[in-house]
Length: 245
Image (cartoon, one colour):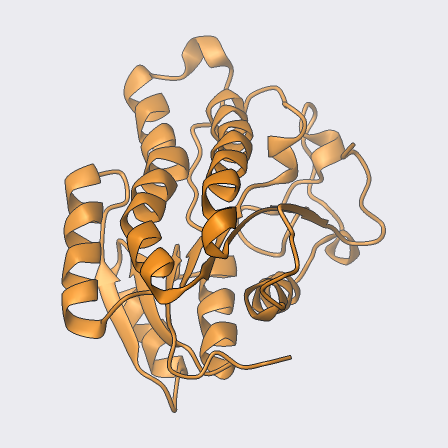
């Protein structure tokens, strides 16, 4: 698999979980990595794990559209055009739909759907000018099947599929690959429940959880795959997991 030597990769949600694992993996493949999340301390911790390449900590509230646009502007002016974008950040507003406060719904939409749109919109011209690039939108099995008590999360993850398909169609003539990735339950604070049991939650057994590093390895493969290879959707789940179509 070719490396990403010298290329600039943006990873959201990079302060923990899959975002952190992905940032570390892309750095191992030679990419300079820009780390986006809210916590400066956590981003600095992740940046300290990365050696041999540059790591840029960009504390950003992804629910704030102006902050997202400003962060990318600062990054491009200081580090150059990005060739990789991984939208791994996500949040939730759990509970019955009738009890979810509208403000919580709006924050989930802003982080899970609007931020990937704004970031993709910002990097598209740079990728087009450079002759190509890759965007990976991290969805969930909740983007393929709706669950009770997760209306905002499921709605945004379903929406991410439509956004990805539209961007993939727009990017294809310019060698910009856009992929929607559907991970199963992961061994992170987002992946403690078995999808088949979301209506009546119980903790998933450890063997039913994907290590985030496994998913990060797959993202690394997607980013480095030959440019002529078309991948628009991929499901990644532990072999014992059930409950997704």
